[in-house]
Structures are given as structure tokens and as C-alpha cells.
Length: 246
Image 1 (cartoon, rainbow, N blue to C red):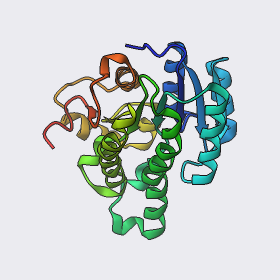
Image 2 (image 1 turned 135 degrees about the horizontal axis):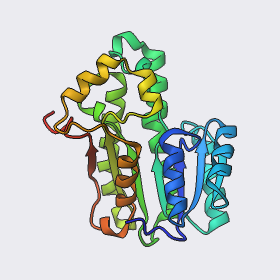
Image 3 (image 1 turned 30 degrees about the horizontal axis):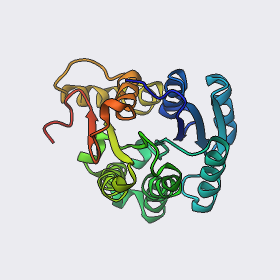
Image 4 (image 1 turned 45 degrees about the vertical axis):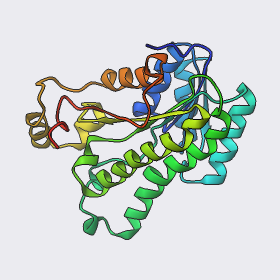
């Protein structure tokens, strides 16, 4: 599936977590990868770890002007952009609370990054993707989108944006899809979620297995591959069945 050789990929939130893993998988498949992260040091370190096909950029996805400059620099250096992974986002137990508990300041920041960041990066990259064969965007949503709460509501908006951009960019040959991961037991999730919460979510899955990073990477590689050439506007739920009945 990973037929991305010599393509140009931009991964936001690329300094660590899923972003770094996505970048490594794309580079391993031959793509030139730009990792964008608000923590520039982390982005540059991740690029060094991945190798010569990766470059790090310091950029806040909620800063429209800054993201516009970065996308322009990437496109100028490589002749365009083929793949955009909108991965950057605020996610933690702190943002998974009811809106009334979050308060307006945190809600605004949550939506600035998770929702408006997706809009800003997509609009900035799209002109450099238009007309390029296999051009595609993958937004990282969440199974929390089907449960509510502050974080979940922001990710439900990302699913809505996925459908909207798929319709608006389809004429330019750009496919737009999303992945909604369930509980993926990364080190971060293990540290953030109480064991009883992990057990409760797992009990709601149809499958007894633990979700792994590779499950999400494989979904990303499929959606960016020629095998998904006729797939757009979709959200692929990778949850072990957790979200299937919601």
C-alpha cells in the first residue's frame, strides 16, 4: 500500500507521537517528509531520527500566516505538495471534560488548534496540491468524536471538515479522508488514562485486542496510497469496534 516513493508529504504535529511515526513510515516508503511542530526543536530532532528524507519546521498550525509561509517554503523546495497529514492537535484528559468545566478560554484554544488548525493547513497546502496525481489529505479525528465532551466535539468538527473539504477540493483532484482512532495504548495514553478507564473502554470494543500505533499507521498508508484512489470524504474508524455501535 505504501506507494509514496518520491512524493512530498507534510505532517503536522510531527515532533513526536503519531506525527513522528507517520513521518517515519512515509519516509521509509520513499517520501520526502516535512515535519511541522510548534516545538521546533522536537521537529528538528524527529527529522534527524528519521533520516535524510525528513526536515523539521517550527510552526503553530493555528497561526495562519506562519503556516502559509511554511507550506510555500516546502512547495518551493520540492516542486509542490502531494500529501498532507493534519495530525497536530490538543489532546489529553484536560480537554476531554464537559464544556462547562473547560471554560471559554480553553474551548477557544482547543478549537483554534484542532479545528481552525486543520482549516489553516488545508487551505495553505491545497494550492500546491491541486492537479498533482494522487494528492490527498488525511485528517486525524478520534473515536471521541462520537461521545461528546470538549475534545470529542472538536474532533467531530474535524470529521465535518473532512466531508466539506472532500467536496470542495475534489475538482482539483485532491482526496480528503479522516482516521478516527480508538484507544491506542501508546506510552502517553497509558500515562494519561487511569487503568479503570482503559478497562472500561476495552470492554466496549468488539475485539479483545489492544490497539497499536501500527494500526493507525497502516490506515494512513492505505488512505495515501493508489489503492484508495476512489475513497474521499470518509472517516475510517480504527477502534476494535468501539465506535461501531455509537
